[in-house]
Image (cartoon, rainbow, N blue to C red; front, side, top):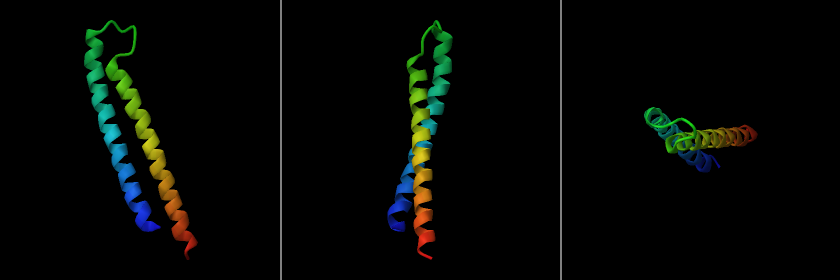
Length: 78
């Protein structure tokens, strides 16, 4: 069971980091776009930033849940 959860946790951690990096990149680009826009609606970069931050929270929650399940299985074997 451990051999299944460790790669899953590592993949979810990587997806969390990737979403965070893309969200920060979108944030930096959205501030540049705000200077050029009229400010009445969300720009494409702001929507991407929102999507990436939601993905980060989702992957982070799944990683935490996988760690909890892994801990439950390892504690139950004692």
